Image (cartoon, rainbow, N blue to C red):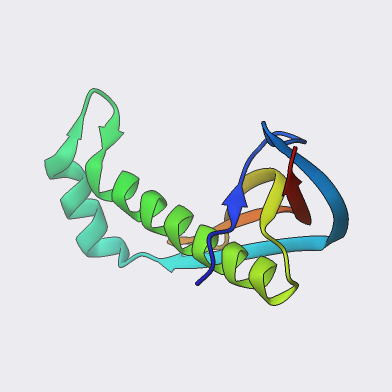
Length: 109
């Protein structure tokens, strides 16, 4: 896979956007086994944080980034600007992670 830069900003230092291609997105839907996750959550909650759920969210972010990069590359982009994450609960035990932004072509300034 090509090296597609992803940034939350509207520009990239040292690079000029030469073409705006399209909106691209990457998604991940994570399922949770409620019974085992509750048991794990009870064991690993410290200070209001659950390590097992944090790992699931991290996995979702990683999968969404990989999907976004692949879609941007398919469109001929070398970068994605204005990227934002969105998280939604989809029913009991399901988490949807979405990353979207604008695929662009750039050149060094």
